[in-house]
Image (cartoon, rainbow, N blue to C red; front, top):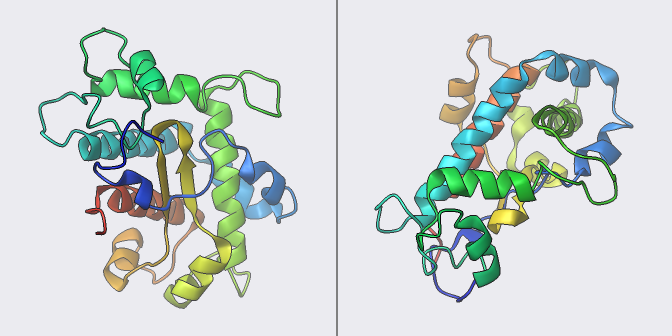
Length: 218
């Protein structure tokens, strides 16, 4: 995607799962219901706040000169010229943060879902993505105790479950391939040495934001 090859290199990041793509629905359907129910019981606003952080990280990554707007050259990794024109609602030649969010959600998870034939909402999106995370949680939970220990989040295990997020509307892909000791401890808000489904969800958002903000590999 994009109007030129060069740029901030967002497309080189790898996040794989579900801004409106429905990956979670197919896989979570065969997983135990316990984790899914716990995740869905948590606040939808909490997950959507996490995606606000993801949008901000994408905007900051694209806004190379930090002037508060993304011009067509900075937008190259995420938009072609037609998409850029649609996102530039104020016709200023730059996409502001509010415009980026409106474009991403209206053309991503807030619209008609391909293959579903129904109008999406923030709540439906959060439910789908939460089921995706519940599926990944269950697949990592080797001893089936409803919690994740540090050793259950090895690089090999994370690679096996293909944990991440795909945001095609913004040309962003990123994969969560490693969890450091400090990241695990930071996510373990209760300090009990393991992660609950809610703590795992928060960890995912933190690592997704970190992946987007990371400098592009050369």
